Image (cartoon, rainbow, N blue to C red):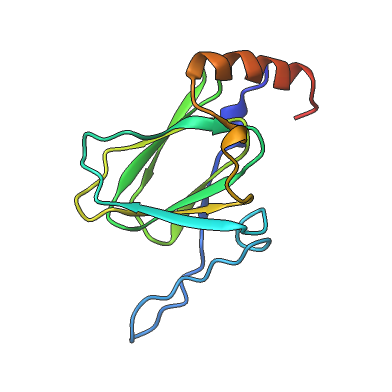
Length: 145
């Protein structure tokens, strides 16, 4: 079975800062591998909180901790997993569709920006890990990904 966590990757954005301060520009279709259709951010999450805990059938994401830190664990339903530490505002993690994601260990000052390739559609979310494992095996068998 294909290791879908291999499709997840860290992205470093160009820092355009100067003596006045830092400036990071992120453009859809250029700096990230999709056009941005939705953006949201999480803040005020306690260090013990786990966010996400789902996969998406269609949506791709880039997660950027614009302030503070957090960790992102991705899993592919076949026993493969990877953990990414988001601790610099000029880096993000790209998460393609059909990858399980969990965000956790938020610092008190964490602001986690999420850029999404699709508008929100509750029907394309898989929120039960066992259901995800069933779907990902069918996704893998029926695709060239």
